[in-house]
Image (cartoon, rainbow, N blue to C red; front, side, top):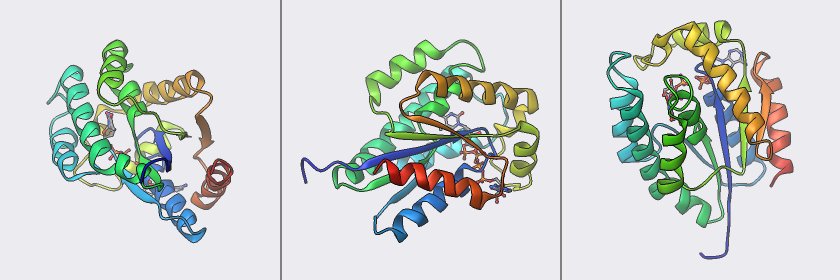
Length: 208
Ligand code: ADP
Ligand code: TYD
């Protein structure tokens, strides 16, 4: 179908802040309201991008340089965009993604060397698409980190950078929300999941 346009929502924040939980709850709420949302995640969200995900989230923290990571995350995102996100949006569906380009801006662009210029240029060239609305779930790194490590998923390469790194990420996400005030909403994640979900559902439904 041409001329039909869906809505694109993303969740961002530090590891363990509740993004996957909230993305799932928002998709449930939208489904109950009669929508047909696509719930997806990064890195991943398409068969090829899930393969790239394994290269990124497993192994030693110093396995890749920040520059190599930018290329791998962007390659995964391009496949995710082509195979999952754009087809759904073109069919008029709502896409809810657990992380998108803001994660690369903050993780690779600002915290491990000043690489934001590379991130932005590659994004413009290869992705060129922003979410309509981004929920930045903010919370204290200590509490979020203990939630994340409790999962023991074997995907802890980034959590293994430690608490100081998570503090820099938190500041990075808050600064990013200031840079993109039209689409970013900062949500206090340090509350019961249901309370966080209520705020998010209200903002999402108001934007549909
Ligand atoms: P993220 O996707 O940001 O890493 P998750 O949604 O996977 O975060 O949540 C990390 C852990 O914390 C999970 O075990 C989840 O069940 C738990 N959790 C999520 N939201 C909350 C909340 N509001 N309060 C307490 N625990 C939570
Ligand atoms: P994710 O599975 O969302 O981790 P978590 O549930 O712990 O938040 O993402 C895996 C890791 O990849 C996470 O630590 C953040 C990192 N990441 C980047 O560094 N850059 C990116 O562009 C993306 C999408 C994720």
